[in-house]
Length: 213
Image 1: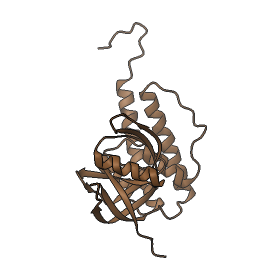
Image 2: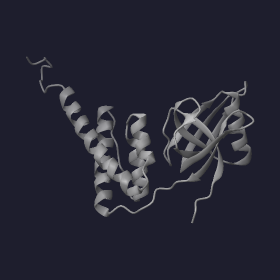
Image 3: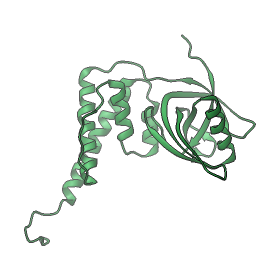
Image 4: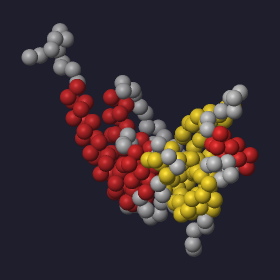
């Protein structure tokens, strides 16, 4: 079945949003105040899409739905949104209020990764998150670590601290298998780098606290 094309208000930003990810935003430009007001009044999402240049978004983004809104006296808004579904842009036009509208189709991840790949991504993600926590002096519990392959892949993509272009490469993947394969490779590299860094900065075990030379 051919994917349905739909009109979606777009918010080009210097960020890559994944489904399930929370994104707080401060809305101050008049055109985006109008866009968010339209979405709230009609209970509709808008699209968050990476833009390296103003009003020049990349092809793949994620719909976002407003979950919290605080209106300020001067018309600005503080909102909290959550990513819902991937989409692909086919055409762009400008609304009467000045914000972009994209003709888009939804672009869900397809395919079923084998159990070994899912287990490897889970193991490396746990390791990655623990190393991040250790580096920040935090202790973590994994009581609600995702088991579903799709949820796990999105959790890993959100957790990874990468440059925007590398984040976008993950969001662009056609299938769940290719996404998890890329995550497994990236997590392996990042875990090795963080392990080396942690070992290098760990203070020497010296009861007197003196620097060894």
